[in-house]
Image 1: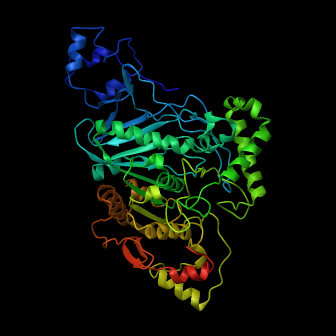
Image 2: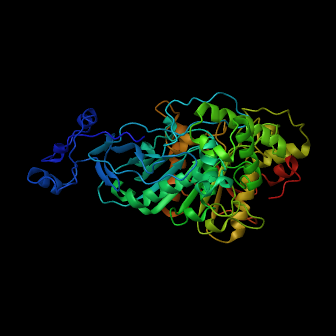
Image 3: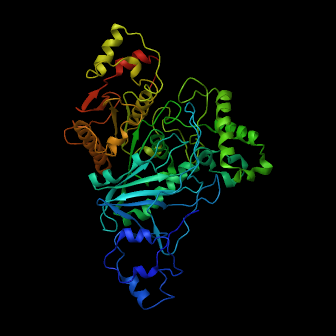
Length: 532
């Protein structure tokens, strides 16, 4: 349920200075009067309508929204962009509200699921199927400016996570680049990708409602972001891990065409998630297994609407492992078989996989792409057996990363993410459309997600001088890509697009370096049979 906080409509009358702190405290107050309904009130109410909106209050298609101002950045948290009244079906439009929605606290996030190979029970506090809300940071609400818009899609596969994490705070990025930053909450796991298309027209898009939520968010941005000082004609979507894979899904769906202009994928691919997504066969089998565990058939399919969240997630986790074994699907992490929640290639919402046999998805042809991975990724979390050194391997490792003293082959992410990223880049370049730019983040212990605080410039006050300098440079490259379609930063070499022939890749480190096919010999030794 959307919680709408109201303030007295009379606050809009005769206001010349606006105290955001005072308004937050009075957010629980309510009034039956609609400040936009002039037909029922005259005099002072009509005069209030003619006044400009107070500082920090913007008008959206559903009503007025009030943000808070901190260190020169307006933040609007938990702003609803759609409304899901049922499970497994596309969300509808937000019901308009009276008064002012005070956006000073995070909204609900999706119920949380599990990723194969990553244990731990999910915490369902603060979750709801109706989790379609945005967090927005802007330097100038309602100032008439048209700033580039950067829309962040969080990680966690398609199973877990939210836009509410502290590391995704967009204030510094917004301030650094004079851009509007938006984080998206949307449905995940069984709530976002349970394929019930065989059970009636109502559930035609159930397998992809998690991505359809993001499409709804992008449509809301087209209609409303100008009120927040953003340019709806310059929208970049960017995300890490599962968030990067979401970018690839949106670049594949015709339903998202025209809603964004550029894409950034940070470590957003494994062999079974990113270049490709779940098939109709596997998603159908998964649904049958879940329904079997719950004892639900076509005759009582609507009972799924009321199954307790924990029970539904437990059945889903069991069925994911069962279906993976049944269809011999390699788990994304580890050596077992297991299926993961992902979008489904249904021939409609997703006509193809992002990577096609000889090209890239048609919907992404004209979208410039910045994509890359980290040097170590998961090798520190899932240590592998040492790879015996040979003169050939040692030479290839040294040639690929000459400045990484003590680096061993098993510490390099060569197959989990780097190779699928190369396949995506190669097929995108083959398409002959908008350019693709490649990178590898190599600074320090470059584990999975290590680049995020550098992108958001959220290292904190204790960061070393060289770390802050690197954050300044990387965030600037991301910002310039969002502004122009070409990544660039002061002190960084000119960033060439990737092609199969050139193999241009930017190594992001204290001393950034543009290299060409830098790890080709190394990958040929570590994964000799891989074709990308």
